[in-house]
Image 1: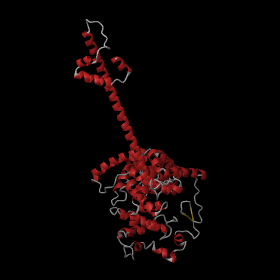
Image 2: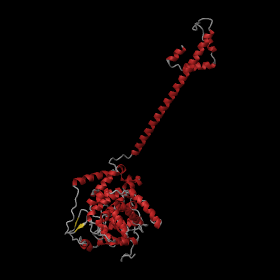
Image 3: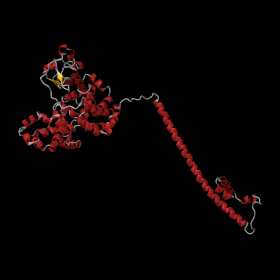
Image 4: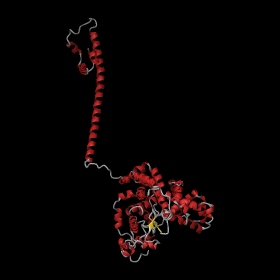
Length: 509
């Protein structure tokens, strides 16, 4: 690829010939230098999105939310962002509904980072972007990137000035990505994606958000052979048969390959197709729900452009059909019409994945295995969060209560106290068990003692059988003890020790 003249160094400053160097050129620093070339005067005005308005234009007045409603939504989103992990784990459906209503403009950039997981990614690699930004980069990519800078939203105040801060940041983000993924390099469709992100966040955050889009939401879209986008074109065409059979039959009859009309739609996420208010609403839902939103938008545009016999009267051939798809009626792209249609269209992740498997099988039969080994596509914020559950720890904000420096030792003391308490309980339990065993043993000894006492009394009666009643109180004890064996003596001794109740005393007396 031919390089621009004057580029002989591989350093970043030299490669930014049309960006950074122009900032020091006094002839190009005037307010109207680029805006006058683009049809604007020095007294330029912008709409609420930052796009320049020509002096003779008043701009389209859109229906805006009241200040009260906007403030209420901002308060709700602030609460969600401050407790993001809990909301994502337990109330994801509520996040989805609020994304469908639209993220408040003041919090949109931060919300996109949280939804995409790019905030977690950035916190896990805090110095990565700085490292990539300081590197020179591959000259073949730098040349292409530099030539694409002025083509990205030239009527937006951030990118209108050649060499301005917007173009510089765009260059930094795109160059960093080529170094982060040298196997993929740079694709021209990445530039508008990165530019939209830079309108809402600084360069480092935009870089990580771009990484998530390329790796999680649209993996393989920006690879060399564009296999992933071709496969999604087939998926779109198959889904169209259910959504709009009329449009499906017409495109089949004209033999128009989906790659001819859907490439820019999908690869740029409609950022160069829809009105800006619709772009932002679509992106809000895209970051939350994934690529199915892009499929829904494309199906709606095809349905309302080619979905009836009346609309097909002006599309008799391939050329007329392609022209109609290049210039879609603006009323079908307005926010008020498009967003409700997106929400109501029942195309789910399961539908997309089922068609993906079918089309992948057909692709392998026709062309063999895919050459681009891209990671698995994740359908939205919930899937990304579940894939990296431990990654949300950096999102926890600093606590308002500062713990003492010896908190660890205090915690250890509490643990020791708890252990001592458990040991005391264990010792008490052992004492109770021993007492129970002793009690059972004493009961058994009592029974034995009663049996021996009965035998002794019987023997004494036999000895005194024919002699009448004798007063044993007048007789010495020794003769009686002499008749008792050593074993019986031991039993008597044990029994005497167990005399601990009134009942036992009565037995012997």
